[in-house]
Image (cartoon, rainbow, N blue to C red; front, side, top):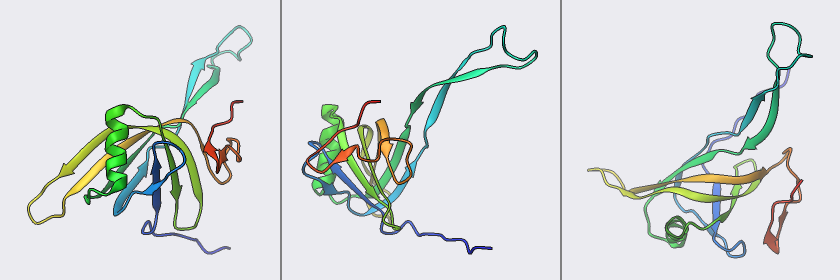
Length: 157
């Protein structure tokens, strides 16, 4: 029987870019929570379906959203996120987990809260990313070489 392996979230790195070339690290990140992907299914029940059962067909995959939160510092990544949200810019993101797994994706900053102030607490800010296309990840069903260092691209299937 193998021993379970677990990793702390501390040390997860999110890098942000508006152009796919120049990345800045989202500093003092305190929360990074992917919502998970979802499949859209349609009812495919027909005369060949076994009696009394529904037949479904997978059509498309929605890569979902990611909720993020950090301690406000007004640094370059904060400004990039704010500009991407205001300008409705499709951005580029690289996420490195503490086990050194690296994930690449494109998305929009669909929500941006510039600050939250509470007495006796540090100023915080938060944002939500709406992922566009697939996420290139270790063991992903998507094309593993979709990310090219010279520029971000998602291969079409």
